[in-house]
Structure formats: C-alpha cells, structure tokens
Image 1: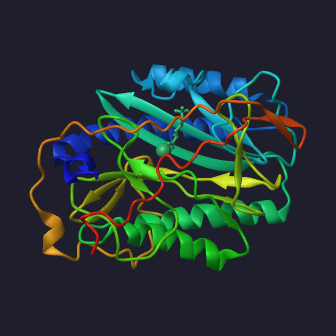
Image 2: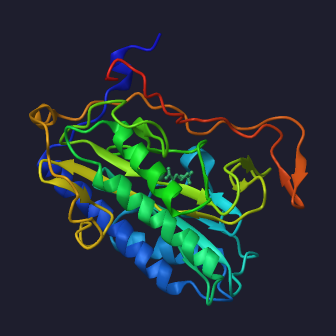
Length: 326
Ligand code: MF3
Ligand code: CO
C-alpha cells in the first residue's frame, strides 16, 4: 500500500516562486523565439539548436537533454506525433504541417516546462481548430488551479473544454505533473476525470498542466526510437503546456510572459477556501517515479514507422482516489 508520505506535493515559498518564475520566463522566451522560427524548410534539429542557444544565453540549462537518456533540448512532434518527438536534421517542416514544441529549462535549481503547437505556413482550418481547442482546454484547466480546489477540478475542466470543442481524442496515457526542484514531481495531473476528487490544492504548489488531443482517437503508440509517441490512427495531434504556480491570488502562469493575465477568463476564481491557504512549508524531497519505461521485445510497424513492441504504460496515470480524496 502506498503511504501518504509517498505522495507529498512540494510546497514553495513566495520567494521560491519568484525564482521559479525566472526559469519559467526562460522557457517562455525560448518558445516564443522557436514559434517565430517555425517556417517551411526549417528542420526540427535547427529548432533544437535555437533552443539550446536561447536557454544557454539566459544562463539556464535544458532539462530534457540527458533526461532518461533523451538526446535533445526540445521535443518536436510533427503532425501525428503527439509528444516526445526527437529533433532531427532529416525532419524538415512543410507547409500545412503542425508542430508541437515542448521545452524545459532549469535556472538556479528551479524548473520551468511548457509546450505549444503551431502551424507551418497555411494550415487546414480543421488543424487550426485542433490547436485552438487544445490551447483553450489548457487555459480552462489553469483557471481551476486555485487553492481550495481539488486536483480533479483541473482535470475535469480540461476534459469538459475538449468535449465541448468537438469530437477530439483526449490522450490519457500521458499527464501533467507537479514541478519545482525537479521536472516531474507529485502529483500526476490527468487531463480527464471527475471534479472534486484528488489532492486538495494549496498555495505554494506548482503544476505543469498539459493537455494532448487528436483529430481522431485517443490511443497512442510509442515508436521504436523509444521516445516518439504517435496517434494509433495517424490523426494529427496538439499539445499545449504551462507551468502554473498556485497563489492566494489565483493561478500565476510562470511560463507565460504576462503571467497568464491576457488568457485567464475574468471568471477565473480566486482563492475560495481558507483550507487551501496554509502557510507554505519548505520544499521536501519528492519520491520520483520513473516516467520512462523502456519497451522491450519485437518491434512492429504502424503507418510505415517502426514501433516499440509494448507501448509504455501510464506512468502518471491519475490516482485520484488516495487518502486526500474527498
Ligand atoms: N516536457 C515533457 C513533459 O511535459 C517531458 C519531456 S520528456 C524528455 O513532461 F525526456 F524530453 F524530457
Ligand atoms: Co511537462
């Protein structure tokens, strides 16, 4: 049985959030430069080099490079690739492609992690809607990142936003996560589930919220490179992510240059429960779970690409029924 202490969520002081903000701004800046660099003909390796340059120039360190052996600074996932696409000189962008770029950096020991999806040149209006639906779902989730709410309120808001936007596949095998002194911390942040369940949200928590949706089904396959996750049906996917600090004044989007002000709906609720405003405690060492389960065995093919024999499971599958559940 898992004990309560295995599920501790790191709590930051306001001063620590100020430092985490600096890391978040490095990520925000880098993603803006990357989004502006996206154009037909550029390779995903070119984008990776730009990211390495920008992160380094800011005095920060990329968090993905070397993470469980990951070989690059960013993840660049094109079209039917959902997440964890490895940048390559051979992957040049074409007009009409959609690309999701995921970027993480460490500054002064604090992590920022964010992702966005953009079109290459002119794109299919249905792809535009896909990207918009995913970004809107992210912001609906962020609006629920409020002390006094439950983690499930975020998950549910993402799910309902996606459902209302259209007939999209909502990825379940990969989730958001707590973040702070490491990239992946407790708790997992699923993009689906019932409201009012899961850990109580408190001031001082930081969460990376990251919906992934598709124009088709929700099923995923990991390619034989051990990283790239694609849609099982070949449909196109989108991924947006922000690192969000939970404060008594509401969500502070550390990886948005304006802190989230321009996107958060006016109705974004502020602190509603005194329970959620306990004084911050110093960070604790989280018990880190491996997000990486290397697939083994015989590979097979999907849409002409080699896949891992056993797609990895749900490393952050939502455990919404712990002792903290209502
Ligand atoms: N940024 C991803 C996430 O949101 C993790 C990237 S996996 C890595 O959790 F290996 F590239 F780091
Ligand atoms: Co993340």
